[in-house]
Amino acid sequence: MHDNSGSSTPNGNGASARAAAGAEQVKEHLRAAKDAAADTLRDTTREAKTWSRSRFAELQDRVEAEPYRAAAWALGIGFLAGVVVTLLGRSGRR
Image (cartoon, rainbow, N blue to C red; front, top):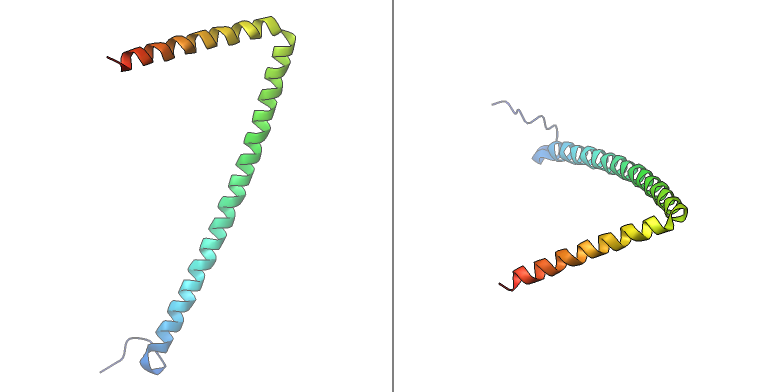
């Protein structure tokens, strides 16, 4: 009978060595994928941080340029939020 296992050593040590080498390749691949994902996340976070800071600076400039208008918007939004919360509270009691 012919041995098709490809093992040149007794008890399949060659197969376990190939499995270990394959596992090491998988580990390296996963490490590379982790590093790529971390780099992408860092870049995306940096872009989001830059965008949010620029939007905040624009908003701050607009509020400083028109403080009464900003106050009117804030009062209107607060009033509407209060109405919504009150209506939701009343409908929950029924």
